[in-house]
Image (tube, rainbow, N blue to C red; front, side, top):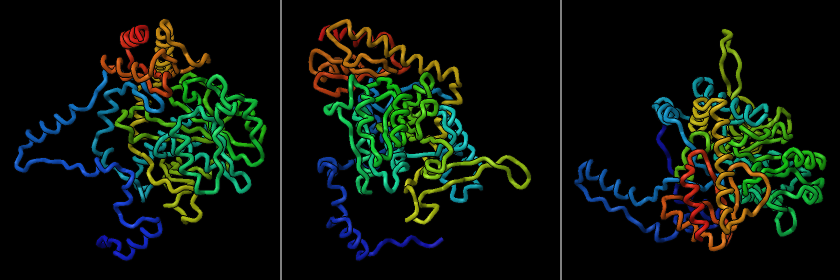
Length: 442
């Protein structure tokens, strides 16, 4: 193996000039100086126990809540112990991206099983493995839909803000127009997409429309009708999904979506300060979508002796074909996260998965009923899955602080006096009642 050759000073200078900065430290200009200047003082000569105790004292400064009622894209679900135990085995942790793929049948099979489960949930025929998170999945899906004469992507405002920002980041340098359809302009009515208003702005230049089911406010859209409207206008449909809701709601495939995307973080992945998460993508077997899907797709076949085996197929990313012809430069296949998700779904089983979804929506509706008994109102009257928005009679931060005093992470303030709540199966009835009492006293 040859030695690693670093770039020369001249090469480094040329690269910095190309991207418009003077020195490497300028690349970190967005990081506050107070954070960059911090040092970690650890005296030399300390024993293992002393170092452990010191680091533990630092960890104790983190706030650990007894109950989490916040979602907005990252969800606190119960993870069976078997998932944590099996996924930490060394043969899984040390497995790397298979560059001689067919030599790594174990990895390929684990990816194949994940893809199969995603297809079952979404009602699609092909899924990949996989992209960084739900936001990047939505952005990659939008690029899949863009054509030479169709370079406009429509996004209603009632989707996750991080998804909108990620799509903008991916597409704004590619001469693609992103139009966010706002409530102010009448595209959002009572928290949901105004179907007639949406139809009025889809034209021959529209490549696709991205919407979410449930949407950012937790409301359930009429997804099937939206898909029909969008298709009648000649555009494609990207449907963002909370994967847990698919245990109860119609799948994107049943609704008529062209591409289903989302984040599989609820499937056995802890919140982990924001990552790593697991974006999933699934689509129908059509030339227009399947062959434009980024990441890896594992196919099942037989070897020369007739035995079942797995291969990588339909590889359209820059590591497999010429860069100028690549449809995506996504690099990671999130293989370990995908393995964890597969273990979670296997451990829960079909009925267990449905029970989780039912518990989520039941607790959310109980919480909404309890909260409105005071001077609190539900902002939207539509049906919801396990998230909902309340309007409180005081500053939202005051409610959040009062809940924190009781060891509860309250919902996410999304306005001066509006809070987006989320209930998963881990939330206890006693905690909901405690928050309801805080609401009444507010």
